[in-house]
Length: 275
Image (cartoon, one colour):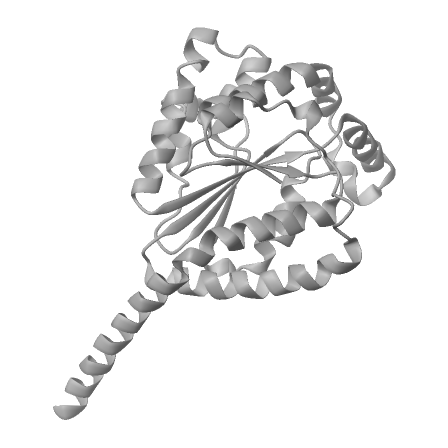
């Protein structure tokens, strides 16, 4: 996985040079045990997050069609307690949404303190699909890069951990996955002529994503590029990254819970004294 935390790093990204497959040292046979261990740790961290109510987590999943956004949600987010998780997929804006600024519909779904929010596609579609398909003039979508950076900085300042993942697959792998959908009856509902049409814009999307990395990578909201041709490796890398992002907060969350526990014990002792 490549982490891009500033504009200089982002400007140097060339997606065709970045592997989409696992490194040789990573073995599928070892992945399940590590993934299960990470899942248990992530569940425990989420419990502390929920109780302490000091922070929240926003996970942004972006990627080309078939990159595995749904699969990542199913496997990685499936490790969490659904009590504190919301998942939002951003499709074509409704009439009401189109009559507001482009971040209006996004902000409504950001997480409350103690909670996770998962975006399956996100506000980045307004500088990706909108750009590639010429749904808005360049003079409009160009300004959105700064709006997005300011938006994510505001979320961070209010305690939200912003984790942005680009699920990176190859053109050959995407083609195979699209063909597999046609062969598998249980996946036929996902078939879309639009997915094949978008393949014609592969180079345009590549440039659009590279500009996103160059314009919106920051230390508090870095982009993480995840090799995603192998689903098991994709899931493992995302689980590693989310768990690693939460670990530094464990101690302060535990301290808050200890403070709350001490106060509640004192309140209970006072109640018993008078009853």
